[in-house]
Image (tube, rainbow, N blue to C red; front, side):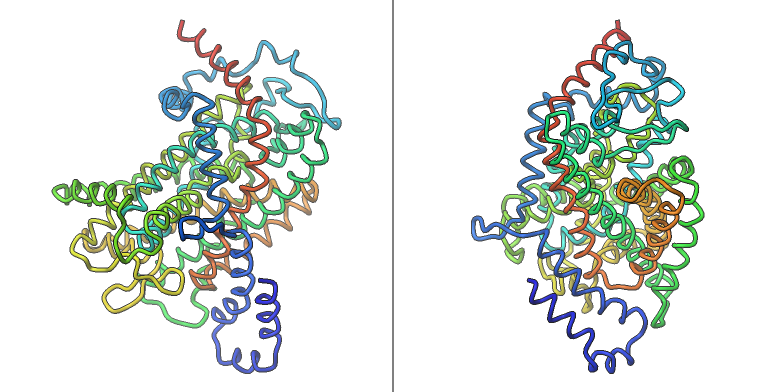
Length: 538
């Protein structure tokens, strides 16, 4: 693996490289320089364990095993308390959440920091439950729901949809745990600014267990990976797929077209992210409902217009989940891998990223935001991803392409040419609704933009944890982040997916270890909040 990276690096710096590179456009030069690192990083993070004749990434065992454990341990909180989560988002318990009667009894210190306490009503947080959910959903409901679903079905056939849904349902319990911990161990400064996420519950929470050095190591590791993930999956992948849709719909050509589109996205994003979480929340709470109505509305229209085929599509999803198409490599295990992997990238349950946004919520009860957090995988994977999958499967009911016939990592053979990612979904929409590719292009741009905004906040929080909370550190991160917006639009889908997948999934290692250590604290917080709800109902 190291040799591959070394040889590729030598190739980039050889005289022959510069001769050939002089005949390349700007986008190709950027891609060729970036690809060796993307391949090396993907191979490192997605190391596989041979099982049933198929290589299964170790990380999927951790994600699915952890999600199943949390689902059982917390009494199927993802199902039994789903209605309560809806009520919390609607603000039913807002007034009760302003102050905890037991807050004084909970004040203690770890390394000089107050832990497990909310200081006073004026400094509970920066955003409400809906704004926190909107910000976090905008970070998860993105192009993974459009492009990655198409990739999963291209590789694994219709059956991959079943395993995506299954992973999404289990992931709701993981989100509940990490979002509860995010609020429980957050920092709030004298001005009411909130600093939270896995960096804080890993360092403070594990220190409570008597393993302060381990907690600090995991926190720093997570923060470093989170910064990288914000540059990759949260940013570069989004601008890449948005640029692909714009170029496709407008028929743009030119060696630097992607870079120019990325620059426009960077300028627009920069205007918003300078204002911090409050401005990001105000934008996302308006953009997320609009883009959801736009995209989901178009998907529902297509599904209703082909309602006579929907039962066949659903039957195909269930059947192929256990008896895959002959052309799909890896059999049932291969299909499961595709479903789990794309669900993990899409809803990020177990990665801990959304806990950063949820930490900013205005509440004295951490478990209340844990319940809000469990709605994300449901919205993201169970609803939006499933709708996208059904639209693509309906599009292919006549066999316009062959499942599993994929080359170069992502490209699917369609009508004599190779398509990848979002373009497959675009073709499916266009066939059902003439002109809908333009609607999808707008939805893609909104999805991309909102995700870029949310992940800028995630990455910035990690950056400040590593380098301090000064204005200089704030500005330096934002400049680098916006540079990756341009980079993502310039490189190929294959390169950006390799880098993005691995960066976001790498967060799982430190975060899930922390969740396995700290989950008993979540149970006590949940019990406390359930008593509050019980008093309200009675």
